[in-house]
Image (cartoon, one colour):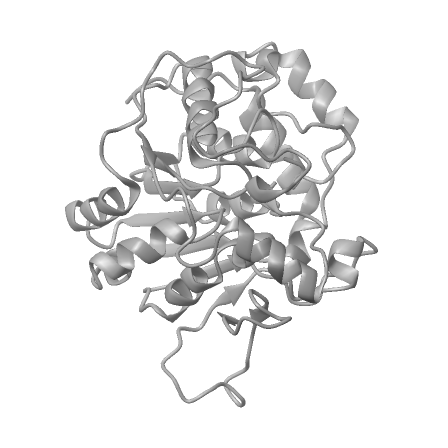
Length: 280
Length: 57
């Protein structure tokens, strides 16, 4: 769960997308694509479904789950909707600096976090293990390129035309910036889910630590590098807005009734109805 | 906007400033979305989730 209401990000993004008569907006999705279901599947699904977006590729970073497990979920989703032509590019397996053991020691000193993504003891497993996927294992393969080089290559190929939609820890983006300082300048815009300012909620995760948010916390140094970079434009969707919507049973029912591959497989749906879109 | 990278209790926390109190380093202005038209969002979400997937261009 990228403690993110990825859907909100889409609203920002899709509302800014050009009309049908204009070229589709080129987008690279950089995300911790955990699954099945939840916002980390809804997010890329919405952009793939939109006739106004051209998804150049989906770069996958460890966050809510380990990278390899997320890559498998993403490949399988694209198989289900018949869009395996869209590249899935593996990104960083680990954050820039800290590791699970560091996070465990940090929590012993400063208090337990409500959610620790791939490191969470409730479902932790080694990074190189891909558990059987409820939606079935993919038969397609990820790209042989790595995320950082793909990101750099794409903004040079389409200068000032690529929107980077980031909805996970920012490790891949930090690596791309470190490889090529022109990367942020050549992107059209960075739109990201991350950060928390003053969320109005009774959720203890944010009541006790209103400035804590998972995507930043999982790789703080990466987020620091990204926010210091010289992007043409930055749009942020923080926790504050992510908690303002709910995925209702009525919405779920309407989607299920459509009978599309997305609806039938349940890939797009949250793990529980009535929860926020940040359910992962 | 930035992130606290001191390895203390606030490690990873969100930092924000205004033009008046920001640190003397080069920072990009960040547009932060704090509200949305929820009904429009719900309609868009359900619509995109229920239409056939666009064919490969």
